[in-house]
View 1: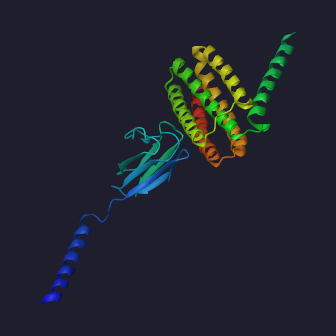
View 2: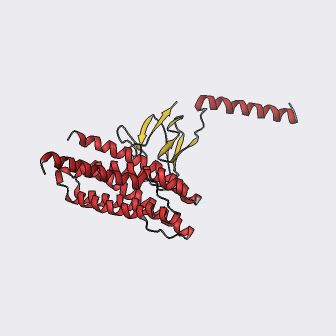
Length: 111
Length: 181
């Protein structure tokens, strides 16, 4: 095999090896997903993610907020001031709320 | 005057007092300019901050203390934004009948809260918070937003409404815990 043909075959082989490696390891590329905090609501209130995705809560409201896991207080953001964000890698389902304003609730669902 | 007449008098006075509040805060819809609306907004928020200060001094209930802390911070945040806006717009808040009535009512409420016994304070405070937020929401939606001329002032007032409604819902949640006590 000579010249261009060899290079094409090499490229195809590398591509196949790369793809099969991806299938065997992990096809999911973690994403970053935003949840808006505005008008005293989390939007979307229920967010579906893949395990390993990063969720960023963005406070666009006129007052400070936080996010806290509701059932066992397993995780909490601390205060998210106006105009600030807080992020977390999600690996499991969670019901969460704003402990400053407990009527504000949200849900994370790992598909 | 016998007991029955006393009771009638008390009921009538209560009714009149409530009517005055409703007229000032809602149905009569006094005509207000933007500088007067700014004054009402600041006074209404300051009133609730003052109530929260008393709650933080007198209550030992964790839910009441958390609620009072939220009221103090959130209403101060609204005042800060209102002050920043009127400064930008070069508007000086101007006293008016509605803001004067709010101040007079707040003074009476503060006296009532200060006088409440330790055993009755939490319920007195949270009952007032429920009523106060209902009245302020009615005033903001029924009087201040419709009459605001400046679009930025109107927008700020519209942005405040969800916060007030969440406060009301939170107050009602805490109120339920005292209903059975």
